[in-house]
Image (tube, rainbow over all chains, first blue to last red; front, side, top):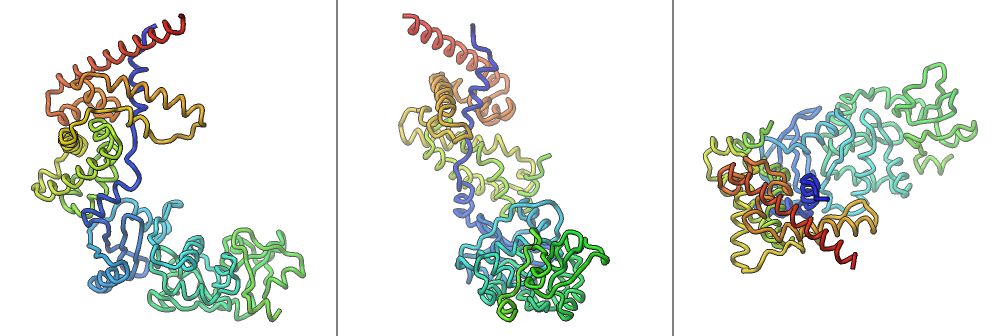
Length: 269
Length: 188
């Protein structure tokens, strides 16, 4: 029986191939179009966002374009040019990460110039949901380095991509808001408020020795800003000052926020 | 639907990356059909985009805004690829192209079959006379429309259409002949 035309055409279609990996990058780098930056609106004022073919590389509050370009040159050893409109993937990442709209997106970041540990800290921080905070000690514990709290703080202070990697969502275990590289504590507070967090409440709780919130019905305890903690009604809400205390009454840690004690608290407990 | 040319016209440096990412498979594929091997096709594709960028930089904004990117890029690529093989003075060999077909999720056996099948089609396609081979490949492998194909090859639509039909008919005949040949061998 003779072969049909459809069979021939589907055979031909099977020969279609994709461009090899890295072709676009080589073209763009060769043309000097590898790195660009745009000005976008941010929740507490405009931002400069620089990106290369490998991802977002540098984010800063937009004040002085010349200074931003200079800093890029110093950090990466190559110039960056300003464009008026970002490629779609950048817009999607900004919408999702800075404004919290849209579902989960892949966030390509160019963190090649950072030491391993700093990169790990930033990738972990990327997991903290919008409108929630975690202590520095949580990041350290999650990375399997529970004592490296100060190193986490230093890594976040040097975060080259604030707003995209939400270092503002990492606070001190004692409830104080902590420092912030992109404009100090007041900017950090404004940013958290813009995500719907009550920062006054956030700071008030630990002052009253409330570090964790538990539910009398589920016997699960969380960080106060965890979405699961916020669902607990006043009537079923119970507060704890340490993980040790939750153990005594047989509560288990929330699987979403995975609360831990700060290392110095374990030592005193 | 396609607002990319309008963006290229107003902000070439900012939107050229989108052009490259959107059309890199087509440009690479077209180059591969002409030059036959992946490494050369990659060189040609890269050069084609550089030429495209320089051309866009020269063109008046109006012309950029009205650009039909696919046939335009395909044409640049075909011309460069032809120069490339002229310089190389080698015959087009499509078997190699079939060898570097991207991997699939299939297991080893299925993949081997698939590759054999692909290799067969690549071989049959390669055996077509030049005139039909590129027309068939650009239409049915790379998925250009007849209008895009006509523009790419700088020939009337009717003429490329008849080349594609004739080429597909030749492929059917070649396939049938090959199957008969295999059947005869097995019968002996």
